[in-house]
Image 1 (cartoon, rainbow, N blue to C red):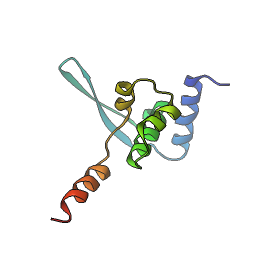
Image 2: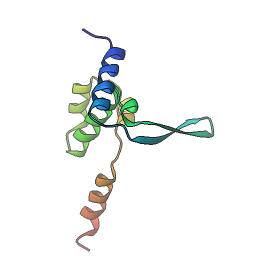
Image 3: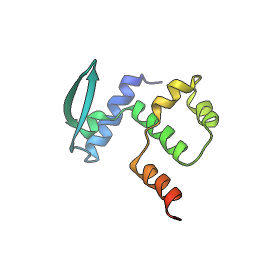
Image 4: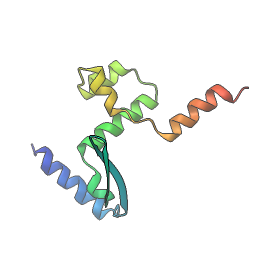
Length: 102
C-alpha cells in the first residue's frame, strides 16, 4: 500500500506527462482577504480532487445522498455537502427544466 502523498505525486506525474500543463487560477480566502494563485493544472490535482469529482457526478446523476455517503464513507451530511460543487451544466439544466415549458 502506498501513502496518500506518494499516490498524489504519481497522479501529478501522469497528468503532467499527458500534457495537462496549462495554467489555472484559483483563490484562497483567509478571513476577509482573498488571494489569487496561479499553478499548472497537473499541480492542482490529487486524490481529494477525484473524491470531489466523484461526489459531484453522482449527485448530478440523481444518486441518493445516503448511497453516495456510504460509498465515500461520509458520516456527516454537513461535511459531505462541502464536497459537492454545482456545475454550470447543472445550473443550466435546472433552469431549463423549470422554464422551457413556459
